[in-house]
Length: 159
Image (cartoon, rainbow, N blue to C red):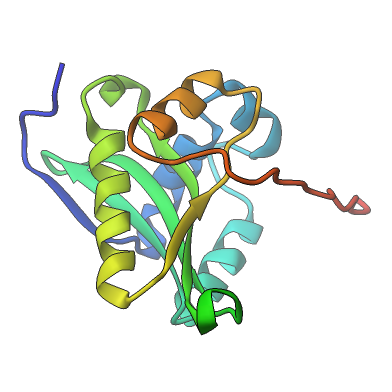
């Protein structure tokens, strides 16, 4: 089923954080990484303020019929590779469970790519966990290629 309503994109606001955190936590991996409750932790607000203050960072929400149907973070990274070309990094892509399978995720990624193109970026990149084979197939279907092997080193924090 395709999205047959008008999907709009906008920068997220602080007031959107509870819904964004709900989306981030709404999958098996996110449920292990996010803290969801009646009141979300202050750390989310601190992180959002840092993103909001950085001109190379934005959290975007996709609205469908006045409700948040999806979200992602778009970060522009200056670099020396690609002859000093900037790259766009897409992170934290989530579509609300009730809206999955309707083409919203594809529209979100296409919108992000167009933003990167308009800014003059040379590369758009993202990562997805190997434990999400459906996400890997989705990104490959719309043109992303597994050209590099990503690695992460998780830092432990003291509680």
